[in-house]
Length: 271
Ligand code: DGL
Image (cartoon, rainbow, N blue to C red; front, side, top):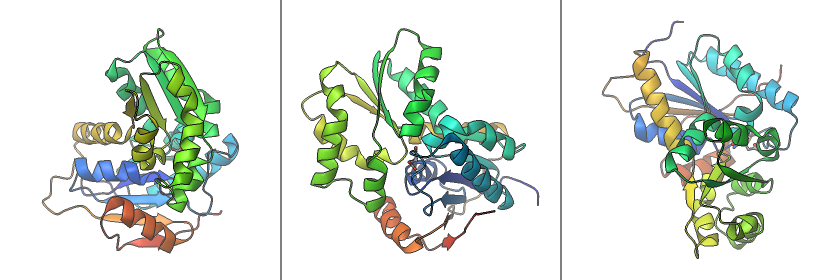
């Protein structure tokens, strides 16, 4: 099968979080078909070792390539932090975008100097954001915090209740007192907590940065450059593949996207 402008865009995450990116891609590129893979059988990735995340990421990339995608978007910071190289290698000639590169660029654009980063253990321990940010501006002050409880809460749909608020206020406490001007949501599950995060920072100004819009814009310009933008009139279709529990994924995904997702399939990837 050969790739052309009508081929779908492949997007993947460990679970539901990458839908924050899929949503931004659908808003920016409404005519593109999307194949989304959420590894719901093996979520969370953020507490797993580098080797395991690399193995899972290569399996998913092979699956997306078999679906004839024209681009792969890594909608997972944990994968972007530790498995970007293996995804790029597995994707061969295909363009690969990741949320850490675009999130970093979006943070630099704000002009803020004191930047907080929250993410999974894998992302924060990798130091990927810090390295990328300091490469672009070594005068930045960066404080990071791993928030491992947030992904299970998001997968449960508990993003605005009192458990979410209490958990966030404990994790974010250090950013309330040390003059932080911007906070990078370094996990694609975290935008689901945006309303609650704003409540925690209700008494102070802090810019919240999520990479979803930035990665969607970057996808548009890359596809344009490669002459692969779908210029058809037909609205794009979202097909979701999950490795377990499609019903639960459907409920959360439809609530989050505010629309029905007719095409949700199970795909197990063990080799
Ligand atoms: N949403 C993912 C991220 O951006 C993964 C979270 C997880 O599976 O732990 O890091």
